[in-house]
Length: 410
View 1 (cartoon, rainbow, N blue to C red):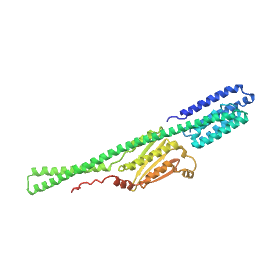
View 2: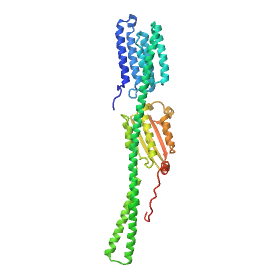
View 3: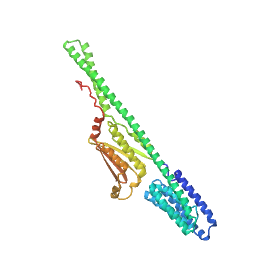
View 4: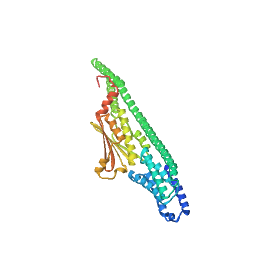
């Protein structure tokens, strides 16, 4: 598994570099600072280092080791460190630190909330700057740096929207590839069914007619008392035709009884879009006679996998399909780390149906199915249940009934 602790994104790298430049210039200017300010050098360095560590904690979860609440705390500490530096060091370029903070704020606030909070931060910052350090230009600097803050917010907003659009496009592409694989498998199943029908309707009927004619010929020969040389080949031909007809029927039954649509390739395409994720598929094959049902189930599987990786940083997802005469049950579990804290009662209460799970529930409702979500033994568990008759009923509505010819020997 690839280590992603220090796999920085571009904007994170720029933030660290900018911090480094501000820190280096501040340390250089400390050489000519007043003795009272130089006395706080150790505290200033601690505040700068604390700012960097808080920035890293606010922008990344360190491979799932930081919860969302811990990241929010780091985000708050980052701002506190910036104000601590301002309180000890009167440099006019220090608002760059709050510009970096503002660029991160969209990870914790909506756009409107971020603008409002950033406005308060700028007002507070330059109020402290003007009052504590008695800077007369604080008012004009506030307007200048406020525009920089808003610019950083807007650029961060555009970046976030671009990332969301890219993620949506990747998810759609994965869905299209998985659906294409599903349709390809469905085409194979339909072709095998067509061949089975052709065997039954053409070859089976002709062999039945041949059997009847051979029976008639055998009776006529027996009535005329022919020689053994004539009767024996006719009887052998009848036995061979009867045996061949039995083999054809057995082959047709085997083809029809073993029609299982393989979703493993489609699911593998979903897994391929998530690095370091393993999907295990076990249990029975899904019903192959309803392509719409299979497509909706595939969408549900994709939603579960996406949630497992996005919210739980899961590394393994298990898909278990169980069929009985009454129902189809699909159970999906993951090893997401965010489910392993709290009591069992707290875990159960913490499960809420978001937009994705609500959409899954609505899809299953179209087939009289149900969705159950729970956390068991630290694993997020999604159980989809469908009545076995639902896909048969829908099949009769979307597929024409093929009337097979009758014969005396079926």
